[in-house]
Amino acid sequence: MTATVIDGKEFAARVRAKVAGHVTRLKDENGITPGLAVVLVGEDPASQVYVRSKGKMTVEVGMNSFEHKLEVNTSEEDLLALIEKLNNDPAVHGILCQLPLPKHLDEDLIINSISPAKDVDGFHISNVGLLGTGQKSMVPCTPLGCLMMLRDHHGSISGMNAVVIGRSNIVGKPMAQLLLNDSATVTIAHSRTKDLADVVRAADIVVAAVGRPEMVPGDWIKQGATVIDVGINRIDAPEKGEGKTRLVGDVDYASCVEVAGAITPVPGGVGPMTIACLLANTVTACCRANGLAEPEGLTA
Ligand SMILES: Nc1nc2c(c(=O)[nH]1)N[C@@H](CN(C=O)c1ccc(C(=O)N[C@@H](CCC(=O)O)C(=O)O)cc1)CN2
Picture (tube, rainbow, N blue to C red):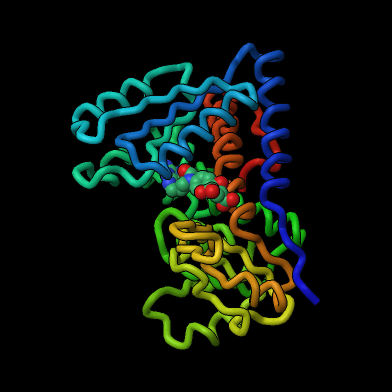
């Protein structure tokens, strides 16, 4: 039996529709339009695509989009001054700096200069601490999207064995924390993990977030397990013609789909959920800033 394919594109469209409904209510009942400010430093082609998508979808759900495109050699001082301005702007409820930042900028310093209440990426150290202690926080978008898909598919993940492969601050660690907060039994595996195949074989839920193309083969997956593939890797695809590329995840989809109970594809799985959850976080931040009830089902 092949796995159920979890359609992230369709799921993300449902989340965006829910966000749009809340935005309409905020406008009609409270006279408030949520605003999201996105800061892009430099001209990284993938970042430009993501930032364009964020702006387009922000407007589509009825929110205000504020895009700030800065030169690649922008100084830390100038970037911090812009963030300070956005922190103090009442029309801006969410702020993010698209990552990666150019090497000369201190990523931690920049992220921690964003007001925690407007940190819709959930990367600020205060939000990391709140999430780590099970308190109300802004939750990083990609792990939040994975959690939403897992809750939707399983109902409850309480007591399930989950293995997160990867320990990044952006995905691996917050993902593990979210799974733990939902009472899963969680293992974080990484490049130094011994007997990784056996660790993964014990999992009911596998979240692969290592950034290595097709690293997890089907024979590592327990029959019927749920596989969430966070990887987005562009590899050469000579079969499509000279110089052509294709996107693959961190799991070998062809072999995993034969063993798993459910699996997210790449593209069209976790990726679209990242932007949908960013919009959800912006509405949540706006409601919190205005002392209004938070929308249900849009955060952890
Ligand atoms: N400040 C942030 N920077 C980055 C984040 C983030 O959450 N906050 N995440 C990634 C990039 N990202 C959003 O910013 C992102 C990545 C992928 C997708 C997506 O929809 N992917 C598609 C495929 C797209 C393609 O064809 O290349 C998919 O998986 O189907 C959306 C957003 C790093 N930086």
